Length: 116
Image (cartoon, rainbow, N blue to C red):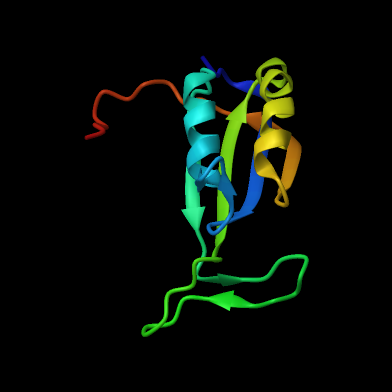
């Protein structure tokens, strides 16, 4: 369980058109993180972006690109990040992995706040 204090934030920058063994890379990575015991991860899909090829991809009303930017973020302990990083490097392919030292504050449970 993640507790207040020092932690590591990992951000992966991908394309939603990228595949790993025939499935979208972001799906493969999310599944790997889930089964590796990462406490939580978020996948965000961008509406426009460009990568190292400097080719602009965007979602238009009449046209949906299959190369839109995808960002996966998670925060974990340094030890846990170090244990999953080699596999993330293999699965990310042409994407980029950013690793940042951070500080996490886990608030005390508030009984008046409910999550559905």
